[in-house]
Image (cartoon, rainbow, N blue to C red; front, side, top):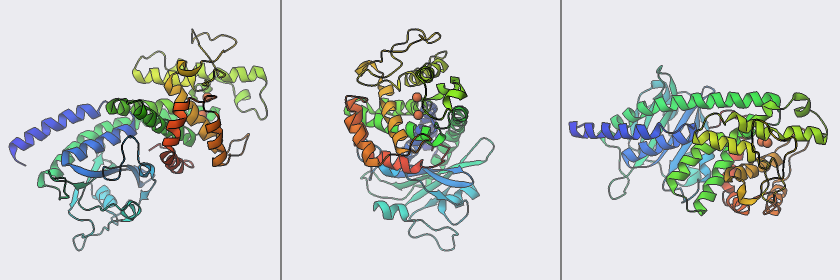
Amino acid sequence: MGRQLQRDSILHITEINKRINRYRDLDSLLNHVLREARQLTAADAGSIYMIRNGCLSFEYVQNDSLAGPGHSPDFLYQHQTVEMDHRSIAGHVAITQRPLVLDDVYRLPPGVPYTFNPSFDQKTHYRTRSVLTVPLLNSRDRIMGIMQIINPRDRQKKDTVFKRDDEAIVTYFANLAAVAIEKALLTREIILRMIKMSELRDPEETAPHVNRVGAYSVEIYHRWAWEQHIDENQIQRTRDLLRIAAMLHDVGKIGISDSILKKRGKLTSAEFRRVQLHTVYGARLFTDVTSEWDEMAAQIALSHHERWDGTGYPGAIRDLSTPPRRLGPGLRGESIPIFGRIVALADVYDALMSQRSYKPCWKESDVLEHIENQRQGHFDPAVVDAFFAAYPVIQSIQKKYGNGNLSGG
Ligand SMILES: [Fe+2]
Ligand SMILES: [Fe+2]
């Protein structure tokens, strides 16, 4: 690498590193790390695999040629794992912990132990050519995952191969990004433990349920925000905050007694009034700290049972520390915070699509009909529109977090 180029690249990467350190949600962080790494090399596509249960799990994919404007393409949530061995490019890099540059994955050099898996290309009709793969190592030099940068483009936007410097630049960037990734993994772990604690109390509030509600909410929000012409940077920042805040919508159930939460059969009206207080208890957990995220988490916990037509709960609460004996009347229309309106729909959709102890799951067509009928009733019509516009990606999220995928990827 030339000296000037090296100095410029290091300064540039230091700037990027400051930016990525602002992200606290693992998904948003990985998304941005990938985007920045691709920009460094003018690459058309890229993906990140993270280690999960001893395998490499395909977590993130970006592809400018395949993506449309204003929404996440549904291949984003596809679920695929790769064994940790030398048979795949990803596995080979994870084991050797060394970067690897290949000019054309369909023409691998003779004698290499790995092969290229063309299934993504076959499914999407994409042509993967030049691939740069780097390991993501934590502070103890343990492998956390790998990042692949795919198909660099020249100034005329034509396919080219990676330049000599690209490997060094991306590896340097990946080493800095790994610090932020390690931090985000830890935050995610702590939140998942918080969720597990509430799961112990309420058996319906499972990790796959909260993962799905978090992911649905983000995608519904993205569509909604796009329709409202909200700036793309603002959308990305909000996605980051919303995902985890939405996952914690029912964390206030920690404050409800077992005899009510685990009761089989119908609740008495007094018991139901106790359950309704989970909204207030949840909001209370986030009111001591005043970051943007805490504010959003408090709003969601408090307002995810409000209904657009004003028949929900808890309504306006003046003092969270001493909630009134009787809640209500519910907030109505746009006086309900938008994130509460979004999580309300995501939560109901997921509850109806799932089997619960007190009910079987509904048929998908019945669920969609119910949501359509509740436009103006339970749900904000603009949120219903965003939900249907995002439906292909909602379906792929459902497949990804179908059963017991605890990690939230
Ligand atoms: Fe709830
Ligand atoms: Fe829920």
